[in-house]
Amino acid sequence: GQSLEQPSEVTAVEGAIVQINCTYQTSGFYGLSWYQQHDGGAPTFLSYNALDGLEETGRFSSFLSRSDSYGYLLLQELQMKDSASYFCAVAGGTSYGKLTFGQGTILTVHP
Amino acid sequence: GAVVSQHPSRVICKSGTSVKIECRSLDFQATTMFWYRQFPKQSLMLMATSNEGSKATYEQGVEKDKFLINHASLTLSTLTVTSAHPEDSSFYICSAPGREDNEQFFGPGTRLTVL
Image 1 (cartoon, rainbow over the protein chains, first blue to last red):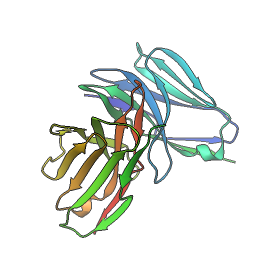
Image 2: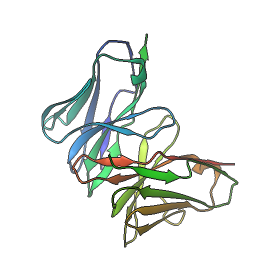
Image 3: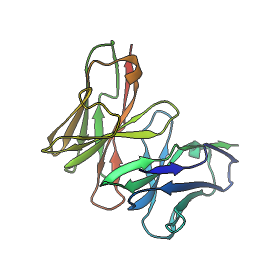
């Protein structure tokens, strides 16, 4: 089976930096993805790591350590609009394309 | 980027009725699509994998006779919730994988409310 753990809530102020951690256990692993979801909306893709290391995409970066089954999403220069739920997800198992999501981290950004 | 649409975006129905939700890939072909369900304040849970030209593959605990999936063409998958009950009220989201390893395109979701 597959399981992912991430913190349930994180709070920060505008302009700050936040790191959301994710640890996973999988029977097969193709990569770790991060998605953002605002209330009532669908998930939107943020970042993906198939190999160890840091991937940077604008204000968002994601890191993966396959040996530790661990990754994180780093959000810099936080803005109010970044308040949302953030999910880590692994692709793998018996069918590549299938995503197993973590429980999600609710990020609240205060002025 | 690629777009996946869902219809309807919201539906309210009476208990015991059936509801069909459509998922379309608008500018690409998808031999596989995925259906997820998300209850309030919870994560997305994969329900089933929709396969064009063959039967859907259901995740453990998902009733295949209750959640009927038909992958009618390379751009359309439908999920029918049969004999819906209030506990089926949820946010249903479909997705389709893209060509790249990390690509997964999600539809905007369908909010189902069963009275």
